[in-house]
Amino acid sequence: MPRPSRKTKPTPEPTGGDDTGLHLTPPGLGLVLLEARAPWEAMAMAAVFPWLSRMPSGDGHAVLVFPGLGASDISTLALRRFLKQHGYQAHGWKQGLNLGPRDGVLDTCRERVHQLHQQHGGKISLIGWSLGGVYAREMAKEMPDLVRCVITLGTPFTGHPKATNAWRFYNLVSGQQSHDEDLLAEVRKPPPVPTTSIYSKTDGIVAWQCSINPTRHAHTENIEVHASHIGMGMNPLAMYAIADRLRQDPAHWKRFDVQGARRWFFKVAHQPEMVTQWY
Image 1 (cartoon, helix red, strand yellow):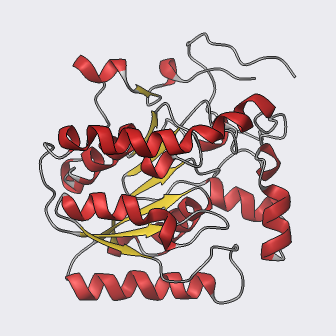
Image 2 (image 1 turned 60 degrees about the vertical axis):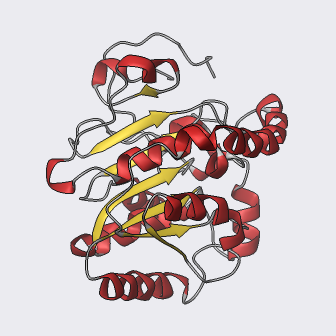
Image 3 (image 1 turned 180 degrees about the horizontal axis):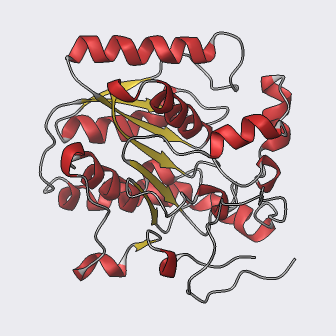
């Protein structure tokens, strides 16, 4: 397999045509070892919290956060605390460990979305970390009238599950197979609401190309941050991007702007000329 090119030029849609991402491989050992930096990301979050706390507060709408594979609401506690401190009504998914979409899991997710929508009297935002982002996207596809926006963190919604280092664990704990092509084709489709993918090219679990939204949709975007997969939900850059996206008015939604100082910390892949070629 050729090495990813760093050139930026017009390229075909990453998820278009018949490309199923089978050419992609999971992150290598070097990136896996870099996952050990997650505690440093948590410490960085604590260090820059006074700066993050100066960001404008949100409008108070409800946010439902889905954990990643093998994780529970404990893993999203720091993120939900951050959201509450910025004025949002942040909630966990309340299903214990995320062991895949086993019997009853998605039904309970649907009930949770309906419950929070009724409880708070308005559309809610959905945030999903890793596999949790797949749940968030699917809930938004099924119930777009109840969902304000979707934000995913290191979520492998395109490409192929075997381009992650977690597919064997997923098969084991979920009791399902990760190579159902019909299901994968549905998962690749973006929700009909503003949808943001936050990803890292140094992700040690998910090949970053699996987290790229197609660029032809005006309501989708991709934001690159420097983060590990395990630490993305505690990474200060990811937190900043999340808070910025949640403040967007869905009726006048605009893609993340990397002008000014932001260009030193973030990269985006919204337009065809900015999509990095990897094949």
